[in-house]
Length: 433
Image 1 (cartoon, helix red, strand yellow):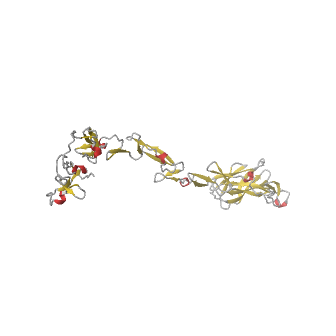
Image 2 (cartoon, rainbow, N blue to C red; image 1 turned 120 degrees about the horizontal axis):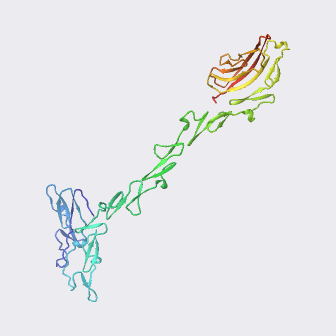
Image 3 (cartoon, rainbow, N blue to C red; image 1 turned 30 degrees about the horizontal axis):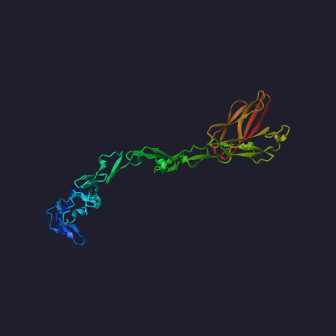
């Protein structure tokens, strides 16, 4: 067993066996040994136990085969246990075969080499290998060890290793180790990159191998978490209120836009009004006609006329001058329907009024006769025959305005004055689109 103590190390030789040709009794042991009657061999005496104050001062007593040493407390001893043969009792008489040392006679009387290794009559240390030679034997150290005196000590191959990254010495050998992200190559010395991605790297989505490591990356719509491995969904809807016309719906790795009832998605984010009158998605009866508005439809009666007015077309009622009941009433009433978006910018031109009949010498004036109690609209006359209805205040829907837009015609040459009304129904949608 090897003992390693810090700072100071001494290499101690083993005890020298007694010569075989000395004639002594079986119980005669070399100095520092005593006869063990039970085991019938010479046993080393531990002088550190048997001699009181064997070492003086701060010196420490170290027992050794056949004696003891006084060394500083920081000293260390590298030694091997002595093979039993080195402490054997001496033989009672010398061997006389007439053959050279290391040889013996066979049955035919020939001198043949003795295999001391097989006969176990060598003094090689347990750490050494006995190799038989002609007339003797040789104590050799195993691979990875070198001989120092009678001992075999480990060779530190790491002092002159060829490892690319790191060398780790071991008894009789050494191993090459690599840094994290690398593995030892086929030559047992070089370090080659490990492709962690092909070996099940803990990336949730995408893995990219790098020299000595790897990186995790996420697909579109995801971001890398704090652990550098997992991917978290990006809530695109929280980044902007303008991604969608109406409403943004977050989805894993993406988002989608939805539109309110009465609208359909145009492309990916724009909401477009559905014209239910054209698509047939309305419930108007035969006595009604369908008028599209933002986000829905309106069923208007085909006959708007009430006495003394008579219907002359789907949206026009006439009060005849021959009827006395029409004397103080507008000569005609025309019905129109339109729709505007909510929160429309102001001022905004929304509807143009145009005279259908022009008389020489006559001039026309336009005004809002009814339905504008809160002053949301005003009339801007363009010329003698037309005017523009202007939105003066921002309005929000859903709500409805019914305006009577009157055109008064005066002809001073003929002392003639008449009026006509355009009854305009304005439907304000619920949204700004």
